[in-house]
Image (cartoon, protein in one colour):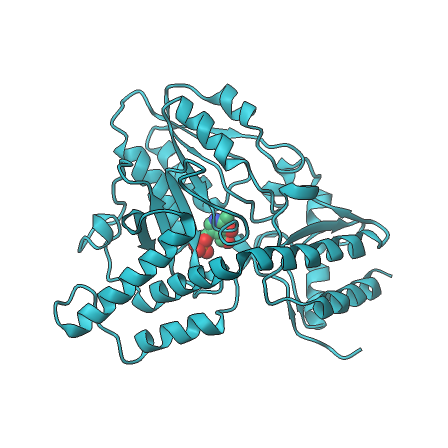
Length: 378
Ligand code: PLP
């Protein structure tokens, strides 16, 4: 069998799309001005950032003034959590609620607040990775400053009911933040309809470059900066703007919005085909959500008696790139804390594989992957 190159690790990162690269090119070459400069080169850069801010804002149904550009999902999460909790003026609100399956960018930001004397409540999820809003309701109180629950999980792709969770948070006067790094462009997100106060997103998961992201901050939300300097981005994110990256993020958001419906349908079909092909192999089990609660681009399964990392290497030798657990914390040989939260044993965790799709994947790639997997497991 001829080796084909297949990239099924799009939750780790994505390729820059041709439209995005084209949009960025002038800002990497001739239009290299600093938006803070008052000459014509600065004006060109300012205009480009302005356009991108509108593109990102439109994709969330927000206002451009509510978008803060950052260096990526991690910084957006840190700014959202630490910045909003430190800005809370009510002295009795000293608690943050989050879940066991958040990305490290959220959990470590919460830990940092714990070190500074805040209380953290970490809620468990069910076997599908779902946080029942009633579980949040039971944990809430008028001492909560912030609730942070991801829109969709990076390991097993569970889609949380953020609209309902935001409602519960607001009933107790708390802010609601969602890490939408994996959900953005793969599910409908509307910050107004869903009543979101803070939302994090990242460029490199949506065919824009690495090193750029954004935080949506609802107008009027108290928030303090966590880095200090020249006062860019309304004083919330000092540092010269990454103009080419920001242009790329804006373009990627615009393209994704114009193709989102068909992309979701296309990826869901491939996802379901992979799930049914894998489940036809002896000893393969699906992890995480069943049915509608799973992101359109996520498949996560385990294989009895196999080591996920061994299969990743074998697939790699056949040109196929997948992930053993979550590549967000690369190099870790520990069982994924997300999978243990779902009730999997350490052995089951170590036998897990994640396939994550993009709009560029094809039926032919699924057929090749299936054939290779059948050979490897026979
Ligand atoms: N949040 C989630 C859910 C993620 O999956 C990731 C990265 O994989 C991040 C945050 C961090 O994003 P970035 O790599 O842009 O810092």
